[in-house]
Amino acid sequence: MSRLQQTEGLTEEQHELIKLVREFVDEQIIPVATELEHKDEYPTQIVEGMKEMGIFGLMIPEEYGGLGESLLTYALCVEEIARGWMSVSGIINTHFIVAYMILQHGTDEQKQHYLPKMATGEIRGAFSMSEPGCGSDVSAIKTKAVRDGDSDNWTINGQKMWLTNGGSANLVAVLVKTDTGADSVYKNMTTFLIDKTEGFGETAQGVTVPGKIDKMGYKGVDTTELVFEGHRTTSAQILGGEPGKGFYQMMDGVEVGRVNVAARGCGVARRAFELGVSYAQQRETFGKKIAEHQAVLFRLADMAVKVEAAHEMMVKAARKKDSGERNDLEAGMAKYLASEYCSQVVEDSFRIHGGYGYSKEYEIERLYREAPMLLIGEGTADIQRMIIGRRLLEDYKLRG
Ligand SMILES: Cc1cc2nc3c(=O)[nH]c(=O)nc-3n(C[C@H](O)[C@H](O)[C@H](O)COP(=O)(O)OP(=O)(O)OC[C@H]3O[C@@H](n4cnc5c(N)ncnc54)[C@H](O)[C@@H]3O)c2cc1C
Image (cartoon, rainbow, N blue to C red):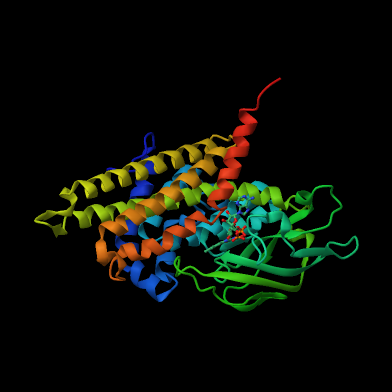
């Protein structure tokens, strides 16, 4: 049991579930993570284990076959999983966002159709906003759905980019432009639910997944492009049934996604600390353990403070959302702080490892390549600062 990242006020059930996940991580993920990551191999066995534990349905209500847990419970499980291997948390993250969006915004038919199968992991979700020409500036997307007259038939053309789980998912929530004549660009966007098969090539009529993008880290989990060439669909596949709401639905999904990325940052940082504090008590220089050199001891202290602070902020953001309040400020702060601190803690642990940190035999080498992803996914650090700053100006607006 770790001294760091303890959470006050959890129920017995929450403690039990998190303990179960922690044991799964220690026994099933950590021993194989680095080898699988180096081979860029999909962790099929780990995913099967997570299905059995009900992880894919963690936040899906019991009436749809899920565990009906809170965002906080989910985030604490993600923290544990990311401590073992960040890519595994990536496998559940997009699934969780899509399930959340369907739960919050889907029609009854969509909930009945998708959620029970998402709870078991039979249907697995990816979500897609980014395109080759834009990521931060979502309003600039070009992929377009055109309606056939007044009918319920639509045709989608365009290219999406950076889909986490783009190959392994069989459902994609995709944001496209739809010219509904609204006065704001944001009201001319729609989320479609695209059913596809797993794998690469033509995975549905007019829907091609060209292949995996080769990345510096975050391996094992597939990240892909998605090409639409005359994909025909219907209004029944619009999330919520009505066009023009897609941007707001996606932003709602990204908001819970940010708590999730913060939780990942916390997990990776804790692992980096554990590796650093362990190595520092083994390696000797100038006649003593390096942990006894004050510079290394201070480094460890700084790392632990960051691990703890990021966790507290992440928990606060999750609890705020669970209470039904708007949490964009807290989620932005948590994501920004946890990802920046994660990078710094990983870098510190890497330095403590000396030359061995540069060797692929040591786990910290993998963490060093994984941490930067958290500075980018679900909105870059600068975009978080923009959100935080603007929100604060709303709250601290000068009167009169
Ligand atoms: C491994 C990986 C997985 C991903 N998975 C997904 C996924 O599943 N689904 C999905 O839709 N997307 C996904 N993304 C895409 C990700 O969300 C985008 O990369 C991210 O939003 C940044 O967009 P961009 O890459 O286009 O950078 P840009 O938007 O081009 O930004 C470039 C730089 O400019 C800065 N910048 C941009 N605008 C501003 C501004 N207004 N003020 C200040 N600075 C600014 C940014 O902070 C950044 O430093 C993934 C990306 C990666 C790397």
